[in-house]
Image (cartoon, rainbow, N blue to C red; front, side, top):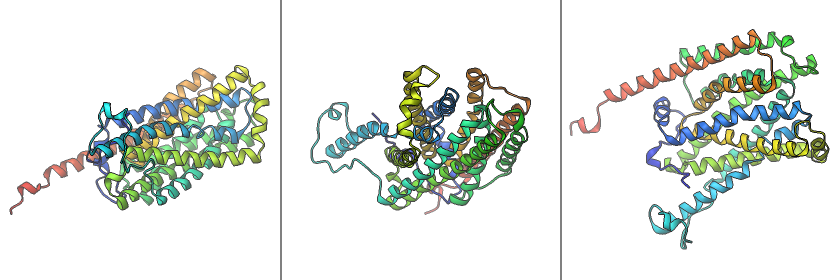
Length: 390
């Protein structure tokens, strides 16, 4: 199983350089980025639907719904094991492994199972705790908001990502990105003014307002975590060398982030007595009873793991802003599925807010393409070493 990218195929991320856009342009042609995009499609479309179904059919445990978003992270041990075997065989044989040597035990290898340094481990743990808090805020929001409304609010993470990327990784703003931020903000404001016509049955105005605020808080925190992940990778590359940042390391980061977030949620579940309440909640669940309950929990774990792995992969192959853009452009898929599966109302105000979100995405993406083309033209005009006089 191939899970590593050779160093010559990808430049390590650098936080303070002008070539970020050209790096993103090159990354768009990487097939592994396509794989991560597919993972993000599965997670972005399926995750909110799974959580909303949990609340609609009798679930009421916010800490539990936060827990299942990252509890599937141990699944990453499987590809990490195959990656380790590949490195061990390559190290023992002094070259790339073949299909025959991959199935044979090797001796004399100094390959490590985990590639993370203590500093990167600490940074990933802190990001994981933030992710646990973000999951909790998001779960509270989905408990009281329709999926279609929550998804549009989450799209504002692009604005927060751009702002934090400017502060943490020196991502430059353009007129197009500023326009995108304004459009996303206006869309969220429109939803806030239309709160009375979008409140689900049985949800009070105070609960709706709390869900609205917590979803925006989740978007802001998610917008902080994406540049923080990019910065962690860049600093690790600066200390250990560009070749030290590969896809296996990215999966290790996601594993640590997921475990830290899961531990954060588990503590909340213990305090809230959620573990003891799970059997009773499963018996009373309105969608398939106990079997449907546990199937939904397992599916949520798998779907959200796809999302988080795809997100950190998009950061690895592109940038934090690229990951934020992908999340935003997938909103219509979630919107359509929510209307079809849950019969959620889709008002004209919500349609305008969605249109503004998509307009903001197009504006940002067009600006990035323009900047990438400009960078490529400047690179073509620059004299190469072969053309310099001795």
